[in-house]
Length: 199
Image (tube, rainbow, N blue to C red):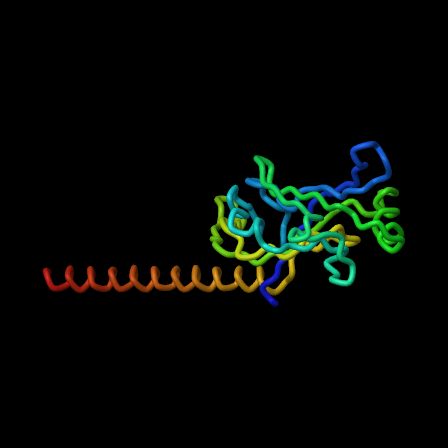
């Protein structure tokens, strides 16, 4: 799926209800109305409501986006998703096995892993350039939410889908500017012809 993109935000471990050892990973997969860092030539804003159509998707919680390390799943009730005024939040009920304790929980407790990423396919988005020349992508709707993942290395963007979409917008903008320049030139020529005919 070459249209899959990934973004990174903070996550944390949480103890269970009785204060026992950490049994949950919680975080925000996305924050609304906030410009991202530079994602490779553009910044991004995710609008409230962008996840409304995908909250019922069968989403997985993975470690490092690796399907070999499943931490939870919405259809089994071990991953819950929610939206609030901040953004897309999630809670993962961590499986109780030694592999996950060694691979995920221990590094998170030490602070070695403190970020999570979510993988998605954008649906309705638009591109614009602000007054400072910064290209901004605004995502209004997600087409699909694939996974949320605590990650060792943050992955801000899969350089295929978003970059391809940016290039398409730039080409369309450039063609529009070229058409506008041609139309202006044709208008000037026609005006000169009219002025010449009236002399």
